Length: 266
Image (cartoon, rainbow, N blue to C red; front, side):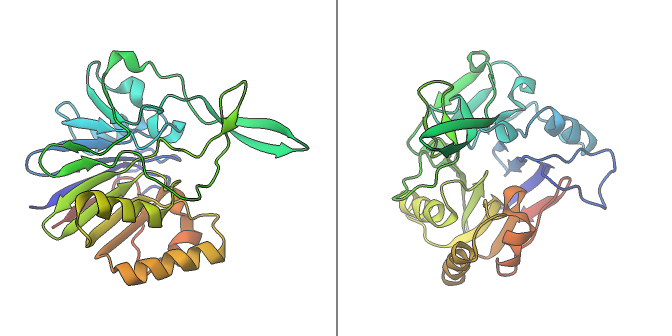
């Protein structure tokens, strides 16, 4: 059974696609097989819906929408989803969060990274543990990391460090191995893959698709990721969004999806 992946929104436009497509910092993918249709992230606004219309894609019969985490560039399009639609995500997706710097014991909030979405309008399924979606799709739940990286703070008062604990990934169990859809890779590509292998019992990875958060990574981290992927031997590496040109340079035989692209994986 094959899956079709439509890139409804990504940072870069496809130069060969319709020039009316919007490309913005963010990510939104539509993943379909013969039975299910999953919207993975919504980007920062209604651009995913605008682009879907231009691409001739109908989003009215989704099995579910999966939100990888609560940053605005992944869940900002939620207000444009139909009321009562099924949304699967981590219980902390609505946490108030900020980019921040810390000096002399003082934390300065720089930029708000979350939005005040009204999730009460939707059929919410909060889960911090793995959850099956249809026959082959699966929500990873929270991804354990021994030494997580901090990305700003949570809360406007009495702030605490944000390790993006709410980040999860969408897994598709194909006949050729796992296809793992990653929103931003804050929890680390290596830990994400190992978690997916552990909860599914499937070791071979057919494809890694999405944001790997490598655009500003150090050569030391990038070399570790490269060596991991060399040993993992996935059939396809498709890094976009926060993977960046710098990150993709280090990924063996990587493809860089852009807004308007459509892929079919067997």
